Image 1 (cartoon, rainbow, N blue to C red):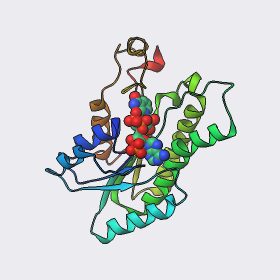
Image 2: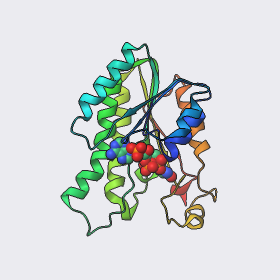
Image 3: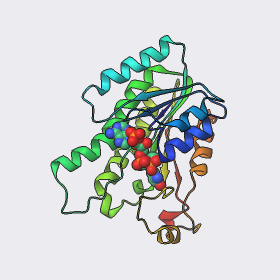
Amino acid sequence: MLVGGRRRLGRALAEDLARDHDLVLTSSESWDGETWVDGLSKTARIRTLQWDAESPELMSRMMADLDTLQAQGWVISGAVVLAGTFPKSPLGTWTAELLEATWRVNLGFPFLCAQALAPRLAEGACLQILLDTSIHQPWLKRLPYSAAKAGLAALVPGLAQLLAPKVRVVGHALGAVLPAEGSDMAFLAERTLLKRIGDPADLCRAVRFAADSPFLTGEILTQDGGRRWV
Ligand SMILES: NC(=O)c1ccc[n+]([C@@H]2O[C@H](COP(=O)([O-])OP(=O)(O)OC[C@H]3O[C@@H](n4cnc5c(N)ncnc54)[C@H](OP(=O)(O)O)[C@@H]3O)[C@@H](O)[C@H]2O)c1
């Protein structure tokens, strides 16, 4: 199950995993017109759901969808929570509304997804959560976002303790892979030891590794090209 499996990294992961997995994909919007998903159906069973962090019905929607999947015989052998936003919000622009909106989608939503999914994950499943290398070195123009990811960095080991031994929990602290529009790619690459930004394939490999590593839990895997050592 990929929460936020429609765009950018979520779509890249869906395309990779559909080679050998049935998939449930969520988006905050309707899936009408997303023809690339039809292509995935040639190799896998694909189910699409609408889960919007902003919806007041979110919790009941998630429960109802997960109950329906279970009733239809779906077994959730793993889940990746990718949903998030990356708002620029420098010091001086913060308001209660901005902070709440940033934390609702980047912190509250992953918490609620984890809570809804936890009892429905199969024995041995791995719940994976997308963090950011900002947990090591916060983005100074995106401190509210960085704080949300720091909150998820507490969720990973905490949830791993709560869900063990049935379910494992792993986080991914990613450096720049698909940078925000208008980013200076050369600058981002220069600020790593490996002198490159990441590739969606880097995440796909790590997600497969975590899913296939039964002795791994409570850990956050950092893939940032060594950014924090520069
Ligand atoms: N891209 C990078 O280089 C990078 C670097 C470090 C960390 N990360 C983390 O990796 C994850 C994926 O990155 P990305 O760049 O692919 O992310 P993104 O495009 O910013 O967003 C990820 C997903 O969040 C979903 N989303 C946005 N608002 C939502 C809402 N209100 N309710 C439910 N879902 C919502 C979007 O799906 P819909 O619009 O379909 O709802 C989108 O597919 C994020 O958690 C991000 O913080 C990414």
